Length: 413
Image 1: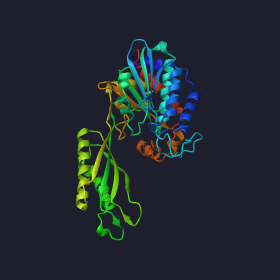
Image 2: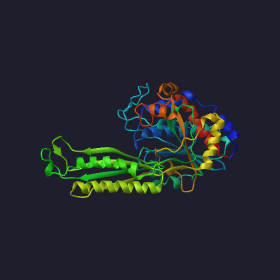
Image 3: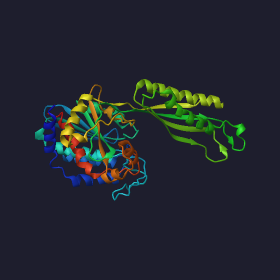
Image 4: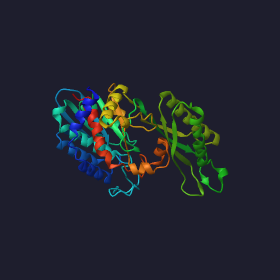
């Protein structure tokens, strides 16, 4: 590794030829044409084409729609840069001139920016091979949005088929006044688990509820009682979020259905707390069903999601120091632990250090107009990830390339 000032100087040199207007247009094109998880065919093809033109050996179709580009440039470490590619089932409401042309699908989480940053960094590093040595691996990951894209890439042999990383690097667009680069050493993102619950009742006519076991009422009690799991069974010192995101039952107002379905999401940051919360969910669901006299026990299916994301502390401080040199000391701060979740860490083989940081993207005018004086108040007021109004400022396109380039150069010889 090199001194932060040296790495920052090299990064400026490597990125001095970036064509901001062209990168911005590439981003606009991706934003106009969002694709859902494991459907990122056009996005993957566009990324693959740019990598090939830059001299990478490119493999498409990894885990169905993933892209891996390899650029070997002499002796040295293997550095992986990762960007996720999928969009969300969200109807865009930004009013942008380059808004989504796909009804009900939108890049509401910034993955179009991630692909743009990834392509720009790959091209910049490929064009300055005389300034570094080692192997650069660029990973366009499909299906980050709760579809298991990183796990699918592992299952498809990404660590066997391509040079094994010595370090894995990635970043994410996030709300906040554009121009900051938050870092968090250690635990930065939470684990996420989903549960699917089926409550079995006895259906019948709405005029004769006494002849039924109403699963809607039972499920409603479950939803209400689950709110006490975090407030009454978890220490205030622990961070847990339990959300019932879907409640489905019935077909008509005068029919009491035979079953009700709930979908839950649990976010935790500690293994023991996770087990305690999941156990409490099961106990509440089973207990309410027994109390209601349900004819058969409920179905409770746990769908393990993403593990916690724990940055290598030394690596994070190393890259944060480079970003301070590159953008100014005031632009880098500790983001703290977030309740959001990511599958980024699954792309790192056991024992391989990784670092995952953020790039704030809220336009200055939007940030200034947001109510509140404190940072938390404004963050709650501006459009965030997964919002139909999420619209990153184009001013972050070039800096987001520079963050990746400088992070890679901190390890490439």
